[in-house]
Length: 350
Ligand SMILES: NC(=O)c1ccc[n+]([C@@H]2O[C@H](COP(=O)([O-])OP(=O)(O)OC[C@H]3O[C@@H](n4cnc5c(N)ncnc54)[C@H](O)[C@@H]3O)[C@@H](O)[C@H]2O)c1
View 1 (tube, rainbow, N blue to C red):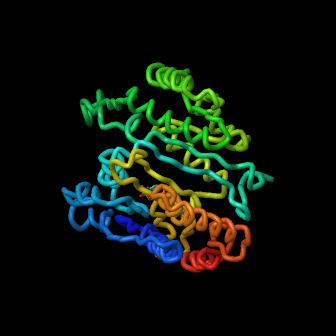
View 2: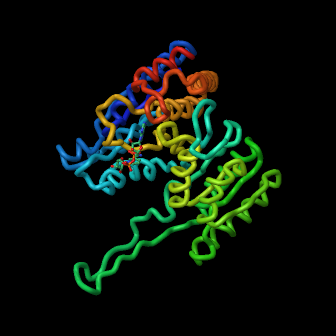
View 3: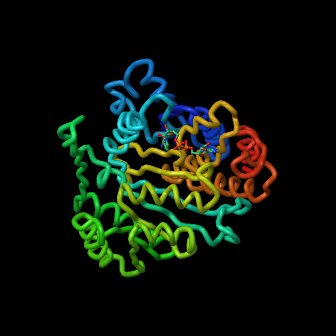
């Protein structure tokens, strides 16, 4: 099999971790008998500074012929964050209908959780974030700008199509895992969209009798992530709630240097995109000390999605053993290894 992969290293440490991912993926291809045809794209804030756009006009069309997109991170000091988000990430997620944003949260053996005394098996859940609508919407605007009467309106959008399909994905995932689904809501304060979300959860749940469902308002759910991370198996949330939970979750499991994510079009009508949760980390960019695990774990999710289950399992095992050994770790995990030394250690474990 040959897979066509679009590479978007992006900015900052994205440019440092993506080459490490490519190195590991190529080694796995040699070992497990598949080929990866990588094509790099310069879509980034650097491109925005030089040419006035994060990507060319036909940027999405160019990406559409790939099996998957492997992205580092975008964002650079001096470029407003909404430019990089709305100029690249959101167009990719929406144009390719990547409606599931899947973010595993797992305390790896050897990684220290900031939560006292938590053992590896006690933190193992997946956040499923709705990735195309909800609170992240272009509908709205400003009125009377610059005057005392100025106002801003931002419209949230929850469609039955959009809500049901992400819920079904989450229920099915829970069915394949430990059979528990938690819904993030706020139907006490947000009185139109969130009660609607709850209604759809109750309706979709009828088709998944084997899955136990509960729900929490987002505020107490955040507290439970910290105090009872062992309660959770699959947690599903709207675009905004899922976004917040999927940084809080990894923070409980040792930091965002290890947190992976997948933006999935489950039906495979369009390319899916795999990227570490973290951003371009300008504070450590250029120092060669970014943790490559988030990127390698994202590469592992890409292999699983492409159907290379054995290679994916081998990579996960190598990541786990490298962390468990605690010999070669980057500074964020308490070690002094460089990005490429840590990748070397994972490759040695393969
Ligand atoms: N998906 C994306 O491309 C994405 C996601 C989040 C933020 N951003 C952008 O990145 C820029 C910086 O944002 P931020 O500082 O809020 O978040 P960030 O994730 O870049 O960094 C937060 C902190 O975590 C550390 N960190 C992140 N990744 C690490 C790694 N692999 N190894 C070790 N330490 C790591 C950083 O050094 C920093 O202290 C902004 O421009 C933001 O818009 C992009």
